[in-house]
Length: 327
Image (cartoon, rainbow, N blue to C red; front, side, top):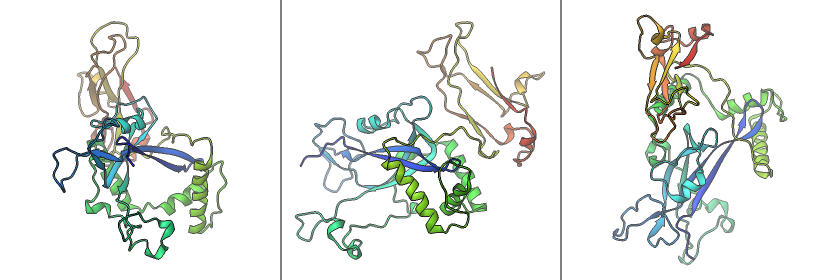
């Protein structure tokens, strides 16, 4: 049987909103099942990880291996697909925006064959105690082993800062699935929850039943909202994206001056330009002068950009008048 070389694996990550105890769509990912194989590639050479562009592609191979892929969300305005994305993956992502520092690990392995090499083994036809010895169950390698190809989830500088800060937090306090489930079960939500004295197995069954209901329902779960508050951290900071402006009074070339107040450096006498000030000026050439669009990555205000002590997160809560100023 001939396979469609543009076939794409579509993955959906569903979780529990700890505030409502309801299943929510966390994100989704798409992965090319096949990749182009160079016509002159020799035996044993590794094929390129490029998804075939058409169903008429003749030289292609299974995209086998261990991979780390980004999760995408439908929240926000549509985004272009990542560079080098194949047509099947682009169609599945459908303008989704990458979730910061969020990814999944997946493996695509060859199916084990029967002893005579004429058929494929199935877990339904083999006793469970022989699954591992016959290759029906393959243990996943540790992430730290370097076995996973992370080209699809290369972190940005801002994500590296987030990951380092998260690692420090986890080092100071354990953060486990058990702790999160127990906290979610005690939150004020609309879904039923186990008692405060529920065992670990009871919590697991409760969460599994809620997640299963999301897949059994005809109505898909709503995307996870990201408009709640998070604990402030000077190390991670606050990422700000200035997308554009509308109906400006004059058709001039424009830029956006972004700053924090306090300290309000640009408006002092004399003006002060420091880490609390950022200029956005990369105009999109096709945008209207009166409604300009800027094509710039997020700018992260952190540490010394905030008033108070650079090594403390507490004093910022005493500044309720702290504002983001865009001029």
